Length: 399
Ligand SMILES: *Cc1c(COP(=O)(O)O)cnc(C)c1O
Image (cartoon, rainbow, N blue to C red):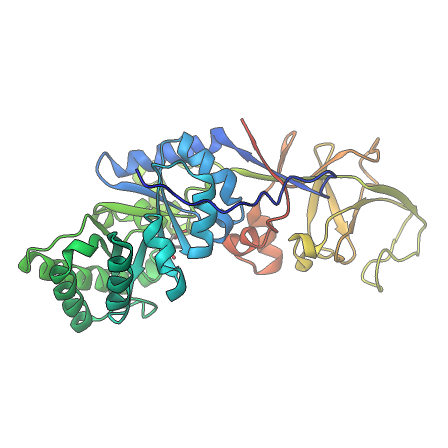
């Protein structure tokens, strides 16, 4: 077991309350993980993608919750995120950096047994030098170019990399050979994905010829896990589906077709976002609410003031255009979303009091606000809206 070096910060222990809170459902996560594991069968390893603060859910909490569900491999987009995972995961969990790792942080990665992608041949001699100095093997994944034209090395460099790794095996663990599919969620893009898969197979053939295999072959994201079993190989990188979202309507309809029913809900949203009524106002007919003339009261109204704004991740595009839940009823947003406040119409919701719970996202009694409803108004996609939720909002794990 490696002696891992933890950074020392606990930024979220504060004396006073934040203006909103996020709740994360352990039982919903369990259902998602079980459903996805069933799809995978016993072989491929489940790596939970926790980049972008675990798609806005919160790395510290999600790492703990996922470990409870038996997931102990985590993928991040940067060394910075990997360090946060490291601070919260158990010593036996593994961490993989799929994206940015600066030269100066390679030592840190090797020392802490963090796996990382290598997508440039030129990185290998540098990693070798550091591994030699530390007298410790570097765990690397070679990422190959198959058609996404993002990161990933082309065939000549892949070939050179294999020669290099073979020659310096005492300083490298060939942990993986991988690529990323450029849009596996869309059926109209399938021809591109098919081409990527066949190019990936050519790289695999080269590995076979050279008799040099990595521990994990991996290419699948959520959409590929759900829709293309042939892409599962030895490890899968599941982001959005872990959090209970279908990657796209295409993938959901394919699932529905496969199970032969009209609807099915094997996955569940984990996140709820809540706050409280901060104040209540009676607004006479003809008055305007908030900044400018965005909303005029056409009749006498009662409005509730909500202590959340666009600086807290509530999109400004929802101005005059969304609902929150109070007392289990839908209260429409009136006027602009301000930096830290917005107002909602509670004229038709009797008995609302200061301090009442407000649901911005999630369920209250028989009503639900989906992330999807945000995306209808704002052009933000699910991932974008969620990943913008500030890390400062406290996240609590609930049953
Ligand atoms: C984000 C990401 C994933 C996960 O994608 P989802 O569609 O959210 O499952 C997998 N692999 C890489 C390289 C990624 O950047």
